[in-house]
Image (cartoon, rainbow, N blue to C red; front, side, top):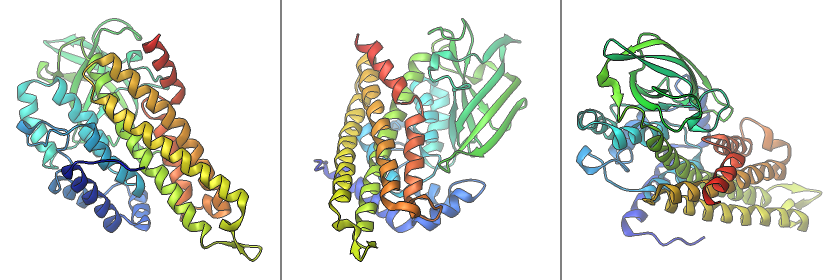
Length: 377
């Protein structure tokens, strides 16, 4: 697909693609995934030097003030290389909450450090298998002028790498209520916070957080008390759009890798790319990857909208389609490679794992289809 980019966007895309191609070969990626951290600190410092960590952050905080389209260019390149890092957790989720809801003091303290690569963040909101952000049940009860947090958070991205963790907890109402949610800023080593870090099936790092009467001062409240849900929805929509862009990069890599395999693998004395039935199946992969890329562009466009209802509907429509197509593309990529597609040392199976993770993250395709229906009826 031909996409018209501005000169600045073209330079950004070229720099990220060049970095991934030169610094992130598949064997290095596998070593990083197998490590305790799951990513490279050296790469993180390079991200900061290249300006990628400040890409969507306001210029007043040392960022570049760019939007979902530019973030999408970074994420698409990351997808093609299966890059693992706390980028989305820090830049879009954690810093996104601070930028949207934080006080002037919180923004001045935190955002420049994020842009410089000296502070990592993450966002803890999910609980059990609930996909609706309003379903949060973890409580923040008033005590001594501050708050005491209790509850369990699941699938928190790169929590072990984060210096600080944004936690969404209920200061009023019941699970499912639109009002009564608030954000709190915790240190990773906060007393009463227990963290269990583990690798997700795609190799990225996630964690379960146990909050056992975590005591916080009033200065750890981020944004208005009871008013976190609109910000949470907006930040998650930015992350969803970014994941759509990443899926576009993964899908393109599936097609390119399979095409290259068709040109070299022989069966029955012939290149398997000469068999018409396989040609048709690869053509389907190509068409679906192009459709997925179109949906990812729609997600970026929707994420930039000022109207919250239109933004949410557009992002959910795209995320639902991307999730469905991504799984289909990933499965076909494995099938067309045969047995080698299932091995740890070959990319095909890892593409499928990442596309599956992207579908599940922040609402799967079914959840987003239902969200779109609710918003457009």
